[in-house]
Length: 108
Image 1 (cartoon, rainbow, N blue to C red):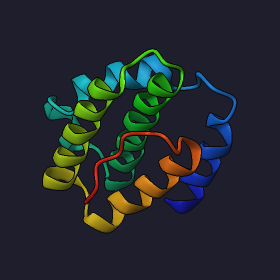
Image 2: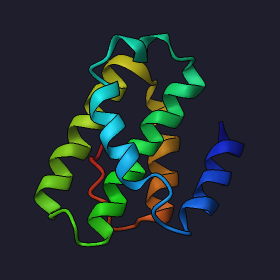
Image 3: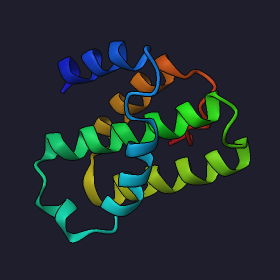
């Protein structure tokens, strides 16, 4: 997982890799029964993509802080409640904050 996140972190510095597609898929995927069929690693990558898309839109000033915070809070709450351990979420959080330091990530 750390290797994948490291690669993705480098790739995302080029911008717009997963931006709109990740954000759209995230909204659909977390409510879809097909999300439950994913492996744990695939779930981690999907949730990482959701946060990077959200933070990218906020970083590019296409999403106000208040709305980005609401989405980040909800994504984080659902991820920990249903799919990830707190340590997995912390790894994703630290990686996302390395890329987007101003991302409105919720405090755990």
